[in-house]
Length: 399
Ligand SMILES: Cc1ncc(COP(=O)(O)O)c(C=O)c1O
Image 1 (cartoon, rainbow, N blue to C red):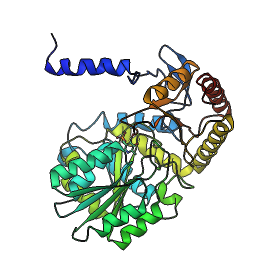
Image 2: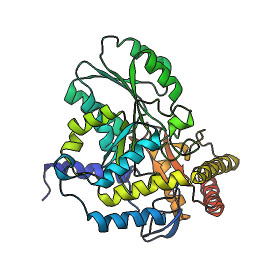
Image 3: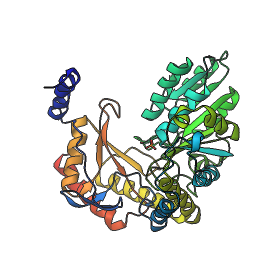
Image 4: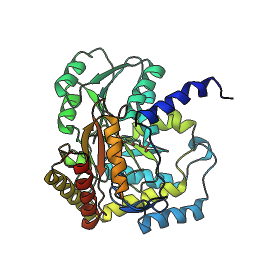
């Protein structure tokens, strides 16, 4: 006998299936890699992972996690300020700050938590937060949370529209703190934020710039130091949030990188710090090993860029119209959600794992398959994936 909640959601689940928007989980039975063993499907070419540098199964990264398990055990069984902080947390946080060019950093169990911590902890009812329209869901929820907790004002500016942002900053003269928040790399578009312009506007109006560089860290800039390095403005962004669950080892975790005062304030007051356990030491150690690896192997970043350029050019050559860009996120817009899921299913039948995204992850009518290449894809991996795209594209009369 189902309860009231189940009676409400069961028809909705059925509706997802009927409309072709139901998400079926695919299970990997081997490490994340350019090719992975997929339960019930055999080996597939993975073109939908954020494992941009291929570090999630890098021997040094795996070994660091194992060593940390031996040295520290599974975890502290406590939140950080009570007795839940290991030396590896301090080592990792120093490395994160060094990597992205800030004075300090503070780790969280996810970038989602890091994003939620910043405005809800740092703002007050006298302040304003202005968010890019296409920001990641964690930022959208962070803004909602900040509004509910602090009673700060909130606003959204049109995607990357500096005129709109400026008018909102101009109108906010009475606000003590004007926080502007943007993705560094927009995860569904692969577009890069106009960081120098955003910095200029923030300086002009005394704003505080927060950049979520989850898809920029390890990816953009000659050394993978992120969107700020890409634009030559390392050290100029007020607050950077990022993930350890993508290019930097791919396990989980995130961090806020900022001044010592901001990180200290978050340590004192951020609720996800005060009331939730820290990153497990295995993950902290693997993440630290990933940063060290990146610092010693800038050629991985170059390889990633070359693979992204190759795949994008070849897709264009086949007649697809991927969104223009320079990042390893390469979306092909298909329109309706069901079309994106259908294309993803057909590609999967050809042994290529590319996820289809529809509403509400992306706006209505802009469903897409999103390809993500890695530094460790070989030309053969990419060419086999492209052959599948040609076959499926013809079948769906897209090319
Ligand atoms: C831009 C952006 N921010 C934050 C996150 C959340 O990262 P995490 O998995 O570390 O919570 C993601 C993950 O999808 C993301 O794409």
